[in-house]
Length: 277
Image (tube, rainbow, N blue to C red; front, side, top):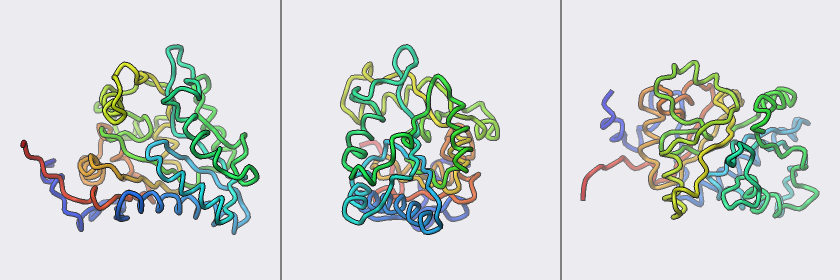
C-alpha cells in the first residue's frame, strides 16, 4: 500500500470501501455542536426506552462540553442517571492519578469546565463519574459489565493514531492489540511532544505515565464516534480509514467495529499536500 496515495484520498472518497463511515460536519464549532448533540441523543433515546445511559468520553476534543452543558441548562437535558467514563488520565511519579488541581488533569478539566457548569439536579451523580483506577485497572471493565455495556464511545485521534492512550505497538498482532484492556503505560514520546507543542510548554512538564481504557473497552461500546477538528489531522484520519490495519495506527482498529464513524471538519477533509516550502 502506497501511503502517499492514501494521503491523496479526495474529500468525496473518504470512507469509501472502508467499514468506518466518514462524515463531514463543517467548521470546528459545527463539529463540536454535532458531538454534543450526538451525546445528548444517546441520553434522550435511552430515556425514551426507560433505561440509563453509559458513555465513554474524552478530554480531547473538549469544545463539545460547553455545548452539552447548554443543552442541559437550556433544553432540560437530564444527565443525572448517565454514567460518564473518562477515557484516560495522567499519573504522577508513583503511578497514582495526578491531582485534579494539576494543570494537565483530565479529571480537573471535566470537573471545572463541565460538571461545575451543570444544574446540580441534572448533572451526572458523583458515583457515575468514573475514571480508570491505576491501582485496580480491571475494575473499569467490571463496572462496564455491571452497567450492561457502554452505549457509545466518543473520542479523538492523536497524531500517531492513538485512541485514548492506546499508543502504537507496531509489533503486536491486531487481534492481540484489540484485546488490550484498561492498563497503566508509558505515554509515547510522540504523544508527549505533540501535547507540549499544542500547549506551548516545555516537554518535561508533560507526564510520562498514564492510565487508559483499552481497545477492548473502546471497541466493546455499541457505537464508536470519533471526532477530528484539528488542522494536523487530515493525514492521520486517512491513515486510520484507508491505511494498513495495524497496531502501528491504533485508530485503524475502528475497522473491526460494526458501527464506527469518524466525523471531521472541512479542513480535515482536504487531501494532504506535502511540500517543502
